[in-house]
Structure formats: structure tokens, C-alpha cells
Image 1 (cartoon, rainbow, N blue to C red):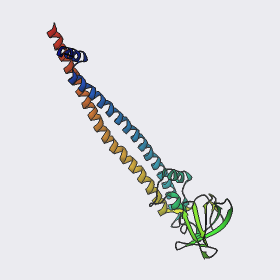
Image 2 (image 1 turned 60 degrees about the vertical axis):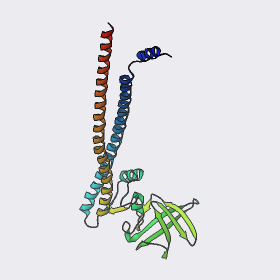
Image 3 (image 1 turned 90 degrees about the vertical axis):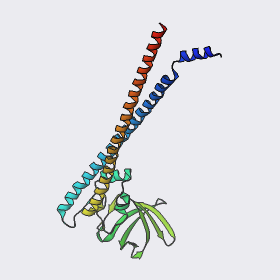
Image 4 (image 1 turned 90 degrees about the horizontal axis):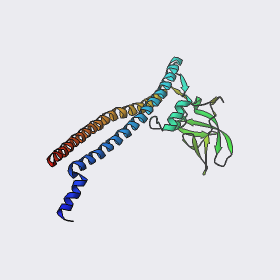
Length: 247
């Protein structure tokens, strides 16, 4: 291909510097738009997390108010909605899952540290056991029992035989009264509330930081649009000048 053919082909394609630059800026503008949309979605999700967690914390705060009216020994169970929310979203209290926090240590949640409970073993059989905890140690029928509790799951090493099962939801206290969830005192309820508020505050902080990041993205986007307009104006003026010289 001779020089004239090359020049003719380049002329048909347009100016490679300005046209190519504009094309790159359009790609960059689309990238910024995608980043902004993704950031908006993240902010919406975190805003919902913040609202939901704060709603749960408010429910616990109502329980705290009720317990405060009962005096020093006041206690109450968490609302089921709060327990389910914390379980589904992995909200921890003092580094423990909500199940472990509620059921992993019974001394301060059941009268005399004793609880009557039905246990379903891994082989499908069901047995009734009275478990007693004292000073962090488990006892069954007055003898030390090698029991490990993780949330609602139990592992019992009985003379070399390891039995595994889970507590039913029909918990009973030492008097045989059914309860839906262990009762917590004011301090324990406040710990749960703090855990929920921490989740809400972290999500709220994320939204605030994302707003600043979004502002930077939009500033860069506006600069890109301005550059595109400038280069298009330059290209227009150049083409106009060429056309005038041809005439």
C-alpha cells in the first residue's frame, strides 16, 4: 500500500488522536457509572441492615425497661424476632452466637442451675434428662457428666460412649414450667442490645463512608464528561477548519 492510499484510509477513519481519546473517555465514563451504581446498591443494603438491627435493638430496649421495673432480680426472655434475626445474621454477643449465649451456660438463667429437658439422640430415640450445672461443671444424677453444649446442640461423653443430640424448643425450668427462651437480666439484655447497635452503627458508618466515595466518583465522572465535551469541540473546530480550507 503506497503513501497516498494510507493517507486516504486514515482520512476516512477520522483523526485517530481525538477520536480515539474520546472513545477511551467514554469507556472510562461507563466504568465510573457502573462503579456508582454498585456503590448505590451497597449503600441500600447496608442502610437496610442498619435499620433492621436498630429495630431489633429497640425491641430489646423495651425489655430492658420492663426488667428495670421488676427490681434487682428482674429478668425477661428475648423476643423471638430478635433471637431469629441474630441467629440468621450471625450477630454475636461477647464473641458468642446468640444460641451459645442463651443456652451455653445455664447457671444464671435457670433456678439453681438445673434444667429438665427432652433430648433427641442421634439414633432417633428420645430421653428425658435433668442436667445440673455448678461452677461451670455439668452433673447428671449427682455424678460429673462430660457434657459439651454448643448453642442448642449437646455432646455427652457417657463412659466412653458419645451421645449427640439437640435440645428441643420446649425448654423447662427446674420447676417444670415451659419457657420459650432463657430469661436474661438487665445486664445481659444490655449486652444483647449493644451487640445489635454495634451492627447498626457499623452499617451506618459504611453508608457514610460510601457517600464520600460516591462523591469522588461523581466528581471524576463530571471531569470526564467535561473532557469529552472539550475534545468534541476541538474535533468539531478542526473539521470546520478543514472544510473551509477545502472550499
